[in-house]
Image (tube, rainbow, N blue to C red; front, side, top):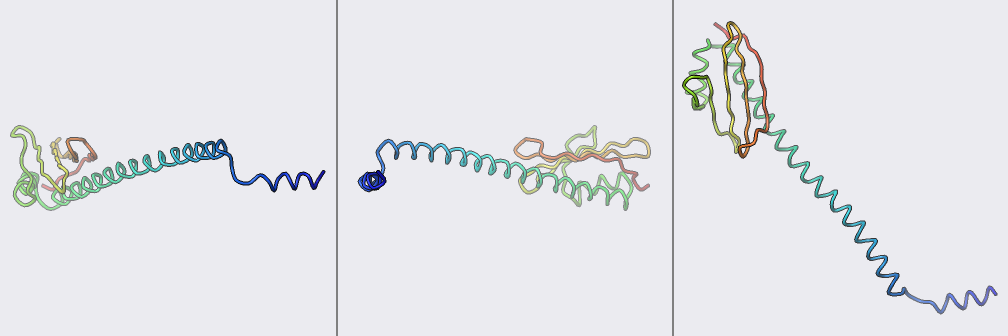
Length: 141
């Protein structure tokens, strides 16, 4: 009986067409699922990089405002934003300034509340808000 099975197995060589089709179908299903993960990962990485870049830009501009608040008075600081830092004043009634920086648009809003100054830095990319920072400062007199 054992010799019969060995003889029978030796006659069967290769795969049938059904076996090949089933294996190709299983492989294509697995590859499709894995490729979806790669696409999702690439998209997630791009969004994360854009957010990180915008946050870095907002932080740099917030530090610049902080530096101005420690060295000059309030009105001189607003004037330096326009003259030295290259910001355009966007509103005559509010202290709102804007500037394009490396493909992003930085908007700084400064509101004086007694001895405190509220500073808001917004960073836009393609008209979409990517980062926002806000702080209260005591401005040098």
